[in-house]
Image (cartoon, rainbow, N blue to C red; front, side, top):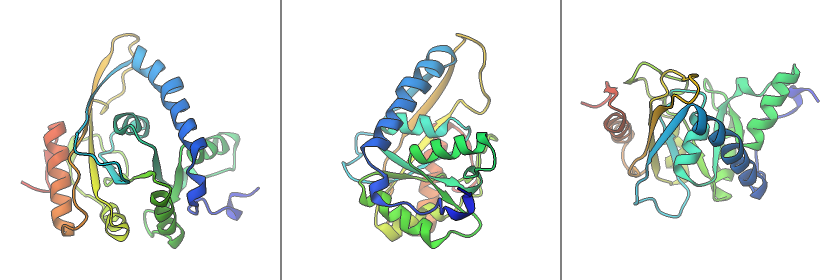
Length: 223
């Protein structure tokens, strides 16, 4: 079926179910951690104890293609992801493989230039299914150890759905390590939640501050 006939931004609550959780578990604990956590990396996780048992907008900084797995591992609860629409292609076997697995992991498409109504509705469905919605405020991958140019989409979804925001700070993967058994340290911090009731500027400043404090990155948002 042509990808033009499928709206990959449109998902229902029933799409985020036990099978999604099992596939996330399989990808994380059977594939990702035994390989990367044994051969190439050592993951250090600091979890905040003030996280309540309710859905959140999860807002990590973005430094590598591994962030999806690392954030899932650190937060320890089922996540759904907004993924750039460029990932949802089916022209080749490789593209179809990526698309299928992004969907299985709980991903759905977002046009970062103009967010579609179907994406907004899908976000509500994610939270309705009691999943947490992961959005990267930096958009693409940023390896320059600097907090700047933050997109406000995560704030819109937090306020629209009246859910708080949990920043997750990741550092140590600014460059990949392929030296066998010479493990590289990666640090992940699940920070205090930020209330969606704050103003947009306050949320951005708090997010930047907490990510910067946990990673040591240069904060050009709030000083």
